Image (cartoon, rainbow, N blue to C red; front, side, top):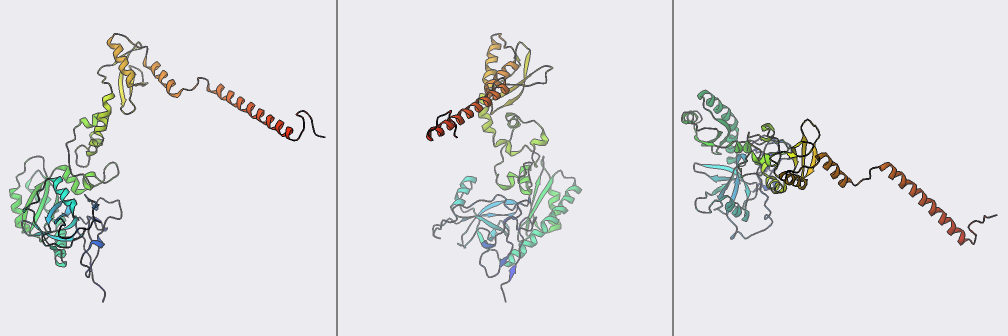
Length: 409
């Protein structure tokens, strides 16, 4: 009789590819499941299969068990990561399901990172390596996985039911996710709200109906979008769902520095806040703006007043236009500074269109009459070809001992 196979589907369960580091199939004869760790093969769903993954570039470095760092990073539903001590010196691999000690009972997660990189993660997140870290109890057994799957199956129906309760009690809050502990003794309810919420009556109803310990955890709108996931306007998966963990404040000035139109529909992400990607190139734009002159008033020329319409920060060009004129004239930034200095001395250039024509002539450096020049080039090329043929003919005649004007009989 062949080895038995157990099929498990952990975490979000939004696709059949084994999302969030799930295991598609585990052979009962295998001690670990790291060989069967699944990943999203479709590359097009928003289930969070690669949510906040960490690449272990020290995985090939084998260290003795006596000096191996015994703190392990474990990932739970929604990409939430916590750190536990491997006090029992279990042989763990990335993707193994482990039962972790909690304040009330235990919870099952997947091993996401081990070794010295975990030490760096603790320093980065400001977590102290002391006795307060709870421990990993054991590698998850078949019975643990069955109970864990039952807990996952309760998440969605419970969330729908709680939303009905919130509506009945007229509480101004938005419930976004529910996570049951693997032993079904506790559930965490993630919600977002603009103001302080009094949900004491709601907790009583939840504890009475579901017979569990209740934890209400308020999260921000960006954290909510990170847990739910999705695709951005760029076509890629949300940054907060894949790699971004530090949510910084994004001012409206970030869009102004980059000359973006202040359209909330285009600048806002799925969380309803300004997109985090507005900060990615902000420093580059701020450095480039140091060479751009400030134009607080129009430029005065003999043709009239020229008003600023657009600025190309990296090409160092500024476009101006006159009143009742639909044409825009590009002026280099150094030229704008010169005109401003002339205006301070009550001097005016002729017009911006002449400056633009002069700039175009300097850039192109093309002759005014291109057709005549092209015709002269063709005639000169034809004369040079005829002269070259004549020289070759004379050279061949000299080799044969024949005069240039003498013909053969």
